[in-house]
Image (cartoon, rainbow, N blue to C red; front, side, top):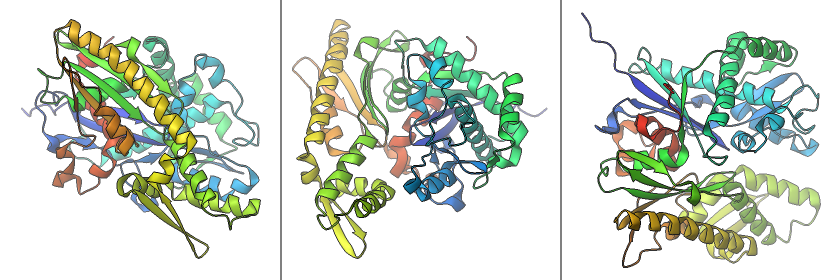
Length: 448
């Protein structure tokens, strides 16, 4: 008799700019071993970039629907014609009237053929994402034949209405799973789904969606799960700042008995985040280039800045300055210049106020429980920015200590990850934490 294969948990985080996924053994939170953690290589290596990050993008071309890096590349090529890719899926799913938003016709800049509603394009993207997840699982010998419990991470968007949101999202995933059976290899990297075949494929998927069992873990809880490994007795209260591409979310959690629960009164979402900072930096660069006078010249420079913004932003926040070569000239941008920008000052002011308001809630909750320590952690693509790290290190008083946790834990540098994990760990943190989180941390369990 052979032993049954070990059961694993897989968590998907479909972020605003990138989608990520990770898997861990079902009991990994209580017997953590980083060697057993599996961040999934969703991105095709031949397309460049970090293999753990999958571009969250759909582009409706003349004859095909493109996904991921192919969608981004084609959208950039057609930018002068005011064509754009659909991104920010998470932002779309956060609206109060979700059914109406999903059934709204896609804008002409995204769908010039006027063929699709937003729901259609979301389902197509989720099909592409599920296909990427399955490819990554299939090449991992520990996961390929193992029982997999699936869950996804999401913000606690709508006043705790996790069940209503969850039902809609799982239905979308079910339609996406059925859709990929219809279109098959057209979802492979660099290919695309025939525009002519798309309506029929969508109709077939909508008629017979797959019945998927998926759990829901709130993003703040996922961050708490990976951060509090080994701190189960001391990390009773936590505040999390998640600065992504589209939004900055702040949440607080408290341990009640054996369960880690969110404090909904501390929840805050700001509409300014990574994309907003990109625009601030790009505007500063334009101010520093008076020689770019014509609108066409400014547009070309703006596009060059946006193509290189990930590296520019990383250098600005880590080294204090960044440089871009454009048409034989050198453009320099410094952190001090950015910090003097009025838009940046307003963002930091609003973020600080929101953080302080949330911290006041978790501090009061901690003191009421006779606890005197709060763990603070920043996650997301902007977690390492100096002003974010300064934020989570403030607020200690004589009664309560604020202990800032590192955005990237030491174990992310393990040799098994070949140097790929640590640089992007803040972006992968939610998927990793979601895979590690025990059942009693879930907002909705597969068994509910």
